[in-house]
Length: 352
Image (tube, rainbow, N blue to C red; front, side):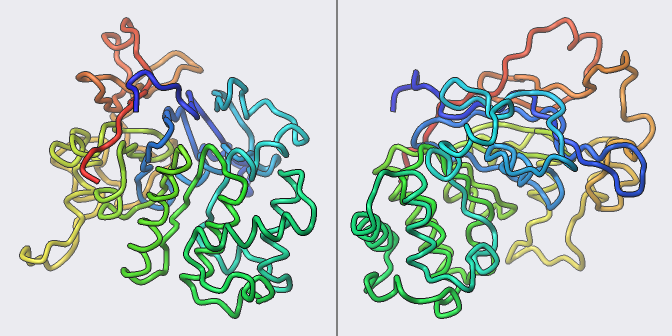
């Protein structure tokens, strides 16, 4: 792949907030996220629950309900258009067709009262000019592509008649039936045993290479990241705190939170009485002090960790600390005077 290939998706300074049911300030779920996805590249978005991974992906599909959600600022560029500014009728030609998504739990994503064939062909009818016979043929081929045997018979079956791994394969078949350019995989192996996990991820890699597709892999499993990602985007409290290719990030994590994530992984030969949490990363940076292992909401961040800025200024900035290596920092007068390049890393691993 050329180092000068054009990105298929560019997220720039994305900020998304939600109404506060208790009447307080709006809840800032995503605050200034930057990331770039290239063809045939797997971008892993990593972080603990509540850091904004899924909200970023749902924003890319314009699936954030508004209200209570709101796009505060930023853009998501796809084929030269800003998805955040598109009307719902314009999104119909993109969502599910050019950008597809695999959701976390297939049993709740599949409709239990419709057959697998009905749900597969619905997406085909929406995005392709196909008659019933052609749509059925496309659905059968999509099921074959994901390794489902006897697809002609299984089209007439219901979701409850499939195992968890087979339902996940159906979700992948639905997502890829229209040959999208971008696939958003939100925890695609959740609740699956390790053997099925490996099969699903290997399947995604094979389909990616044959279809020139970019994959945004959302996960908290660093083992999955090490095996499958080309580039890693680490998120914390709604922000990107580190961005690098997978080998550099694993060899030398720079941000205190990234180092904390690695320290929280249990090792076979490392006996511990308790696992490391965010609270334990107090020796690395003051910003994690007194967080008690929870992802913080911005107003609750410890005193002394937020810089004094003019009203309306973003207090966080991604700094390219070395070529193609970005780390999140609090904005200072020194950083204020510098021009900062947004993360854009056209890299694919060659060990597979």
